[in-house]
Image 1 (cartoon, rainbow, N blue to C red):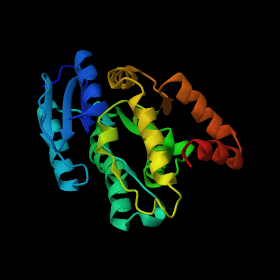
Image 2: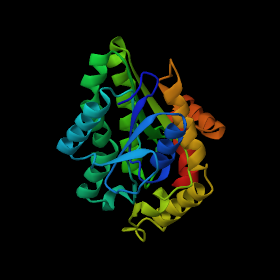
Image 3: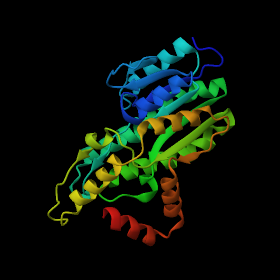
Image 4: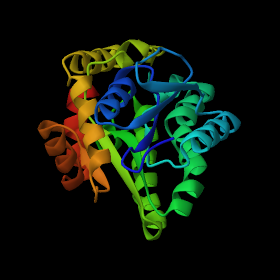
Length: 266
């Protein structure tokens, strides 16, 4: 059972990439860490629970298991997610819905499961991982961008709903990070001829940016540091260049923003 000073933290998508690095950093900070993912890739000092975040029953059972063992949940970090790419016109509804089922509704399902316990204990911290794509709106990654925009908007609204109960909600908008996320992306170049080769060129540019992106271990430590804050902000953007990009996207008129993003990825 957790001591008073040991934070109990759940990390989803903790078997790889940012989730795994975050779980490791939290463990190094002295937290009791439970990692929710479909794959069991053992990490010393971190407890794995086999959970698909799109399975509400599995999520509820796993959260109940943590409560029974630790009697509390101090923080949840929703890292589970994946990406698809391709032209909207040629993307199946099944693919589009799957993108939202994991990236958005997976986050919602986990938070819905922990909120009653956090509200009862009068404290807690929910950290939802989003992307600068939520404000930059990347063509040919439209459904990924939309799913992350949904996560960000949801987080801002949820923060006000649960603030009176001592629960903090934070959304972390990330930029390009060098992880297995790039290789795992479900790519489709259907319609590339019709779109003049723009689909493949756009995704190739994105993948190049990702492979030259930030170190995931650094991001893991950054997210773990947010969990340690007594009064965390509602939104954080990791990396100076992405903070600037995010601010620029929010300040520029839509036409100007679209022109810049379109020149890079369109």
